[in-house]
Image 1 (cartoon, rainbow, N blue to C red):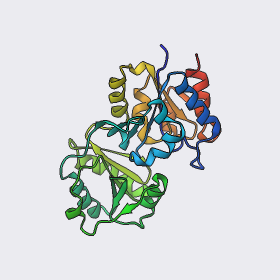
Image 2: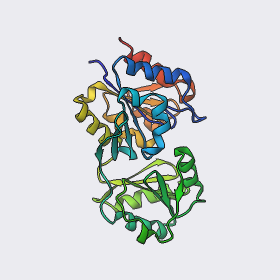
Image 3: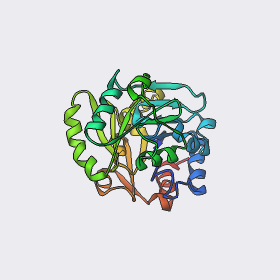
Amino acid sequence: MAYELLVLDVDGTLVNTKKEITKKTKDAVIECQEKGIKVAIASGRCTEGIRHQAKEVKLDEFGGYIISYNGGRITNCRTGEVVYNIPLPDGMIHELYDYSLKENTGILTYYDGKIISHSDTDPYIVVDARGCDIPIWVPEDFHAEVRFPVNKCILTGDPEHLEKLEEKAARDFEGRLSVYRSEGFYLEMMPLGVDKAYGVSKLLQRLGYSRGQMICCGDGFNDLPMIEYAGLGVAMANAPEELKERADYIAPSCDEDGLVEVINRFVKDW
């Protein structure tokens, strides 16, 4: 069966460690689309935080998709239409804000092209703001001013602390939220059952493709669900060992244009 959909994580996959899309990788991804292969970017970032990468590989020209918020929202890049969206339950962001104070973590969420947070100096939040190229807004009164739907929340902190908190938070929010780390210092608090596999499954339904027609490539903990779900799950060489052990194929690292090899090996049968 021919592959019809190529799904790419951003950091450590589409972009290299310099946060750049190399010309070789860009040209290969664009050529895929010229030959009729659909391309989607799947990221834990907010939609606005992926806009530059999506534009660079011409998802807007070819009608590709952004799967943002770790599967919580799908946007058609050509039209700007949000074709799928699932927010956190009502009031959950306030409960999570109080939880972050209790558990001594930072907290961030996203709305209207901004990061909303308790602090604009938390180093882990600053890293996200710079990576997404969006501003940070710190409400004077979080409970009073944050009164809008959000797709997810992230607790931030020292990796050792969050490693311990991940298991506790999963118990504390069992049956209400999905809890997992995307990076050592980011603990994702998601609508129940939502992850990148959930997001790509919704896109497959929209496009009318099967799992067997999809390649998913990634390097992070939050990529594991879609890598296991895909017809061909690809881990980059720079991924953790746990991820590589559960992938169907290990590509060269993001600094070695690993996606180019994936495209040449599995997609280029035109």
